[in-house]
Image (cartoon, rainbow, N blue to C red; front, side, top):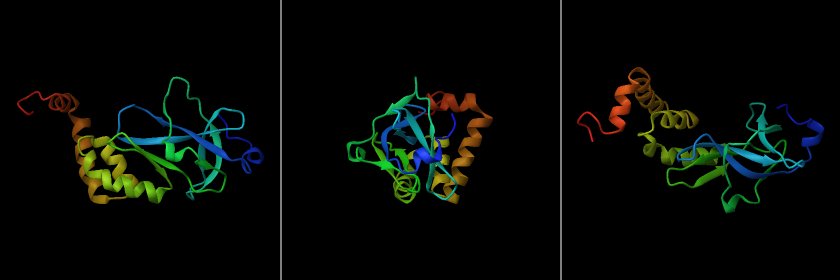
Length: 161
């Protein structure tokens, strides 16, 4: 979809109504979804400055969308506001906020992500932890080179339980 006309989105408050995930199970990052005046779903756009530069329509039919936590019910965004990020924590709860707030939470949860190498690497990249990126990359490379053996290890096959 195309971005919303800038004149339509600048003065408008965009209430947060959902969190899009590619899978239901925690942990992982989520995309905050905002309700437009037309009732449709939108995602925030950025010009690379960590601020909202506009909104783009999002087709969420058939997608996994979580309701935001109650504490976020009054959360909204406008053009010029800081971008909102969302992280689905290993305990199943969500943390939503500006990048620095979400970075702090992700950094605290990083050690819990080692059993999920791709999520671990994504989270390490998000917080710019070079050592964790290096370690997670080793694990993701192993999975990419030997996916069958890794799947057997995940199922407890081969004497490792």
